[in-house]
Every structure is written in structure tokens, then in C-alpha cells.
Image (cartoon, rainbow, N blue to C red; front, side, top):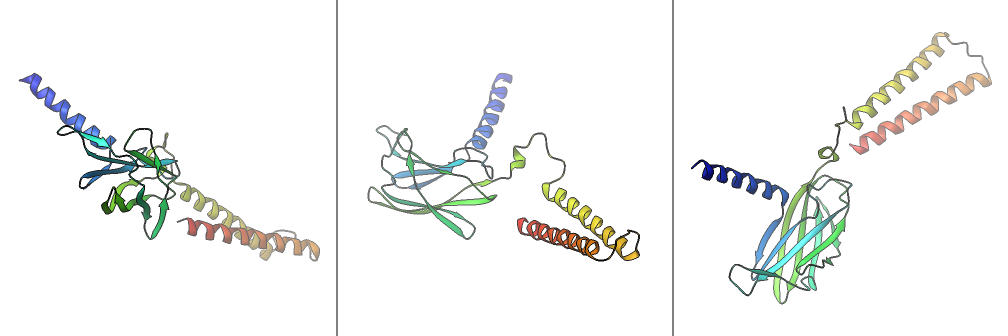
Length: 208
């Protein structure tokens, strides 16, 4: 009895691990099965990956399946993300029924494959969501203390404080700044520093 219970536990764990390792989505478009997902999982932003497709139909025996050749001859695929879309080129894998399209995901979030056309005369019009793209933090080791945005903000605060001290010292005369060209150069330098800080703030806001 203990052996049976242990076997069931192992089976449950193995099923759980399998579902995580193969987070692909399969839809039925009779008589075909269309499976879509990522080549590398979890998909991570900025890292080269592949949209992968598996097209199968019933085999010669019950409960068996075989790959479909030239499945994308009259079938188009468009990758969707938010309000943007891109028609992608599909390449054939050496293994029959398997196809792929290389991509570097540039944003985290949900991606969807839009398939329109036909496979050997069978109409196909489906949208298939695939696993969300994650940030590089899922692969970071060791973990970075604080985000790059936090570090940028700290650097900007330091630069602004330094600029404020320079301006204050010029106002109260604590720095011996002579008139004429020297004074003009000082003002010019402070202006450049202020402009650089403003540009850095704008870039930081856009990145968020």
C-alpha cells in the first residue's frame, strides 16, 4: 500500500513538472491539432527565442497522430502584442509537422498568435494566446539589490543636489568667482549640467 501511495505521489509531481515544462496551447481544427508555444520556456524579454508550431492529424492507428507537411502553404500567422501586430515567416523544422519562427521578444506581457488561411482545404481562423514573456529577473543570479530605475533616480538626486550647492555658493559669494569670462564660463557650465539632468529625467520617464 505504501508503495502504491508513493507511486501516486511521484506521478502527481511528474505531471506537475511536465505541465510547467511544456506550457504550449493546443486547439482543435478538425481534423487537425494545432499546438503553439515558445521554443525556450520561460520566455524572457531580450533573449532570442522561437514561436513554435506543431500541426498534426490522426495517424493510421487509434490514438496516434502524424505531422502535417506544408501546413503553412496557405496559412498566415500574425504575432499580436497589445495594439501592435507583425506577420511572421514560418520555417519548417526537420521533424515533420514542426515549424518555427525566430524572434527576440522586446516587451514583457502577453503574446497571441493569429492564424488565418487553410490547411489542405480546411479553413483556419483562430487566435491562440501563448505564455507571457517575463523580465530577466527570473534568470538573474545573484539577485540585483534594487532596480536600475532606483539606481538612476539616486544618481539624479545626487547630481541635482550638487548643482543646487554650486548655485547657492555663487549666490552667497562663498566661492571666489571673478567677473567677466570666468563668471560666464561658470554659468555656462552650470547650464550644461542642468540641461543634462533634464534630459536624463525625460529619458527615465520615457523608459517607465
